[in-house]
Length: 450
Ligand SMILES: CC(C)(COP(=O)(O)OP(=O)(O)OC[C@H]1O[C@@H](n2cnc3c(N)ncnc32)[C@H](O)[C@@H]1OP(=O)(O)O)[C@@H](O)C(=O)NCCC(=O)NCCS
Image 1 (cartoon, rainbow, N blue to C red):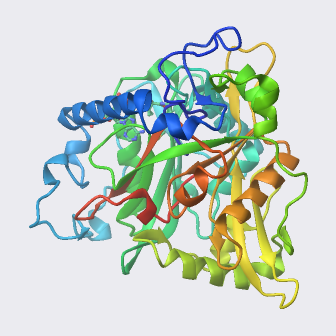
Image 2: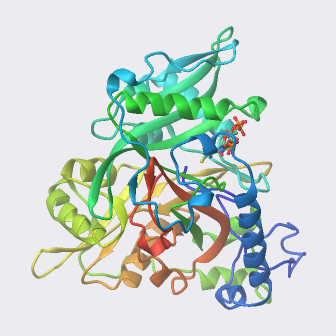
Image 3: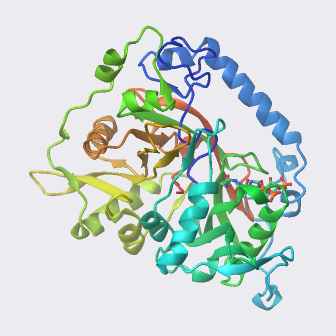
């Protein structure tokens, strides 16, 4: 998943609505004004930070009947200096991996979802569109497009058997889903073959029946069958034990719509027209040589990315095939731009974002929010702030409503300056069967999962 909590939103750090005439929603998302950053550093925002800490510590005391049995770093391991970094359980021989799928409750059966098949892809799309991640207030729900799912689930070397569904035997209705895709992820100096596990979803009517652990065990079994023993995943919930915890930041591109749908709200002492002016962007990118990435750019972009990602403790180990798949632009799925020096024609900078709309629930005027999510960005000559401002400009040109970014890599250096506001959803990153001695800071993480 991309995020959690108010996935598609954030919080202003204010406890009460400053302008109920304009936005009666009691649940703030992001405040649509630039004083946000000041407010978040004091007053109400610190209350939020405290609330968050309390919630986290309560989560640490919670029992995890399933996760306590899994080879993941346990909460009690925190601060234990005798535990070494690396795999928790050694790989077993393939002949020891269970050959049969795990048992499901009698009314259900396993299915492998062939995402190339349009009818199956539509079923998966429908399950996720109706049942996948919502914000805490149930105002927005992720709406991954079919094209996006085909992209996310078919990277180089993907395994069809890792796209797993559960159907009702009688009706054949698809009611649960989980996926893995292969990736090479470098943890410090070691490049580890992993699965990236994503799109865990159980139909709303089948929740709290312990189906999720069965799905997780089944995808793990099928991953083991390919001789892969580690995985990376993210979740909005606290489980044993985050590798790091990141925060989403949101940059309004279409503030009026964001306020109208309750994603953000008018800041104190702000009018709509001042807010619109505040978030206005130039109509064209400003950096000379800024253009969309093309196939011919594969080699220099891969070189740029590999060098940049080598600076983070955990990051993907991309080769040209990976870059072609993950970063070559695909309309309404992923977009990449670069700076080609007008003098030397050298590729010096790169930025990218993916497209993940959210359904707007229960709003008579709007059905979708069009969101861009910052992906991988590398600045060597152009200042990162300027590069990301150009990314905002092209996203605005393409009629995105909001541009989201995690505080991973060097993103913190541009968030406040470019008028991003902090969201209220935290995104926790996890590794399966791999232990790091200490949690990382978000800025040490070079990995973005979809
Ligand atoms: C996430 C979801 C599949 C969990 O299913 P559920 O019916 O609520 O929970 P179940 O009774 O089946 O299983 C509970 C177990 O799954 C774990 N679990 C819940 N959400 C999880 C997640 N996102 N990742 C990993 N494990 C998770 C719980 O921690 C619990 O294990 P524990 O006892 O060790 O703590 C379901 O709530 C859902 O589809 N939510 C909407 C989509 C979503 O949030 N997907 C996850 C994106 S990361």
